[in-house]
Figure 1 (spheres, rainbow, N blue to C red):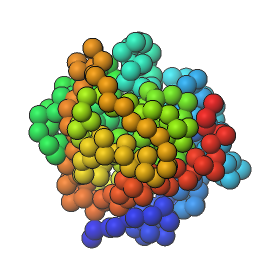
Figure 2 (figure 1 turned 45 degrees about the vertical axis):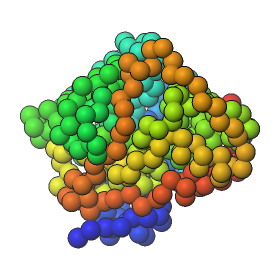
Figure 3 (figure 1 turned 30 degrees about the vertical axis):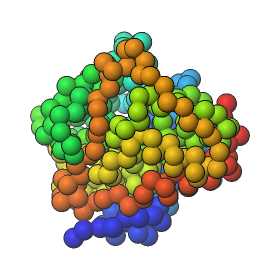
Length: 345
């Protein structure tokens, strides 16, 4: 059976998914960021018992406003994934973990690779080791990245594409992915790993441009600034709206067919960089564009065009993205019009 999930309306999720998560104890690491908080809102509506863990590190995406309206319905722990004692205290009784906590900037991963290693690899191992010792039945869904593929050899990119990351961020994400698969094969912990394309949407940080490029361009357009395009702007990217990403996480987390698997999570559609910016400016109603040369060192880390092949996740689990770019940008813009005071600084 194939499922069409177009909205964040929980009633449009598969009945199997809603039934699975009803009364389940769910832990979301990095739970105060964009993806984690949107996931928390969805799980509360389903009836899950939700715990968020977030270190609230400066310049990252954590924001207490992200859980506005559900703060009294969830358990929020301000703590670090690298805190072994805290993880061991939190883990017993948990049914599902969405492991989203990470150092999230590929730029910062190059300037501070040891921090990236510590959070994305050591933090992951602390979590997995606690699961091995205390809770081997817990389902884990790990949020990896398209950056694990490195320079793209063909499009659309399937899960068999070579993985030769160009940056520390991608290398550590790939290592964390392999940790999860090892703990599945060696210890039987049901884990699934995702390679997510370029997410955007409500509840994402808007303080800097180090990640979340669509959100950053929406802010620049809203403040009538010049948006700079490197090169000719012809590069293709696959942008996934957060509501689609949440539906994918929930369907993957509830389906045992996903255990031990790797899935691309994207739209399967490529959009030219310059066309994405035109759409942002059109929807916001202001903003300007300037074409500029590529920075001297940027070509070394440019992956090339990227379009995700999402045939595997559709064929095995019946999931596919339903939001087009214009709708996603419009809803994101409307969210920040209403709530920008909580995100701008």
